[in-house]
Image 1 (cartoon, rainbow, N blue to C red):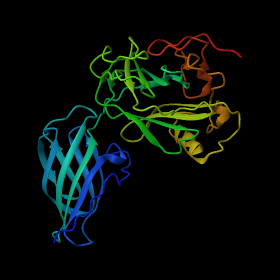
Image 2 (image 1 turned 90 degrees about the horizontal axis):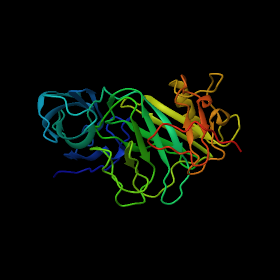
Image 3 (image 1 turned 90 degrees about the vertical axis):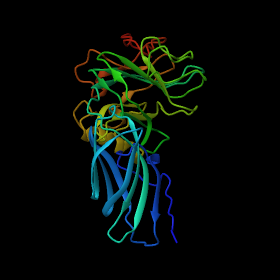
Image 4 (image 1 turned 120 degrees about the vertical axis):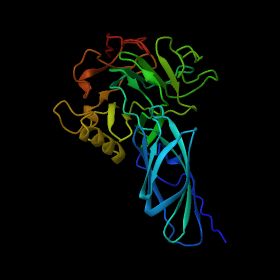
Length: 333
């Protein structure tokens, strides 16, 4: 009699299989407790995928949606799947795979992963709105520093009340050009706000910009806090592409371990540091005191080194410029 073990969202997969919800199901077929376990998956190259198991398996059946054709399959503890052609960079692939070990124990895995994107653009976090004033939402503005594709790029926020390293948004494939602006709104309060993958005129709502692509986080939850927030962008290898740290404290070090860990991550990857080149504490963050919904935190777009707080400032009242070049006038209290 078959024994089924259903695991829903039970894996944390090193960022490779998109999200913790990437494993749709993993069914162990057969009664043996020694049946192989599914461990991980990733896109190795633009036309090759890997599926990792706890022991060597033989693939009995595999399909890839939407309609992706397979050139070859190499079995083993790491199953290597060669595609006939490369999908769009960072597009979602649903894999349905039936594997069997040498003792005839079978495992059926259905999992989502992102195709490899080797064309992620160089970009900067350019403006950050920390305050909500209905219907005007908080947002993160990105400035593209090169051409590329945003597919599979992940945005992470760790705030003063949010201890989890949580991806708040993962982009679908979308071509961008150097000097383009992209605005990620951090909540959705109007029904006609839609992600602008096809063009800049798709989204309604009073917060939508006419000069940038607008994207929206569902729900009405506050995600960025002026007390302390770390924002960064990751590629498919968990490398930091851009970051900013804000705080209204001048303490030398963080009072919460998860904020210290996030600051150390950015420092170790060379993405954020103190003016002296050391690991950043609150005193080394962009000062968020005085920010409002119209007084936003802005990056000096002419700065050669954006990796510390010296390149940032709070703009004047009514100086918010989502989707446009930053207002250079600075707020003074």
